[in-house]
Image 1 (cartoon, rainbow, N blue to C red):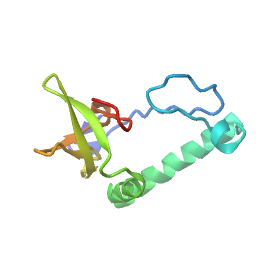
Image 2 (tube, helix red, strand yellow):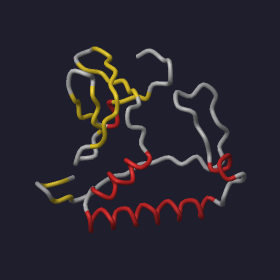
Image 3 (cartoon, rainbow, N blue to C red):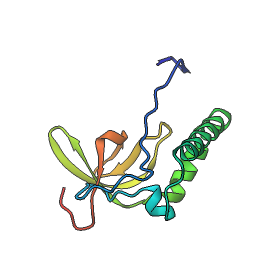
Length: 130
């Protein structure tokens, strides 16, 4: 919740697959810490690491704003990758250009740039139609 520029509170939700079996046919290829690390760390240890990273990220954001987040994203992102999104009942495809100052994905349709929230976008697999 916010008033002007001040944030009163924030709810954050995330999921972390530590050791659950990977579901077949997922839209995005799933993984788990057990798969990536070769074994599943204790849940308390995994939770502590995630919470520490979130606290560090929040502190950096409070001190330096969004720029460090944008820099880290740019180092890992797939500029030029094609994504799909809905506008006026139509599915459009566009190439990823970057992030704006609010953290929205900036894409180019070839005709215009769009600024999209995460829930508006879906990744397309190579060769997939929108």
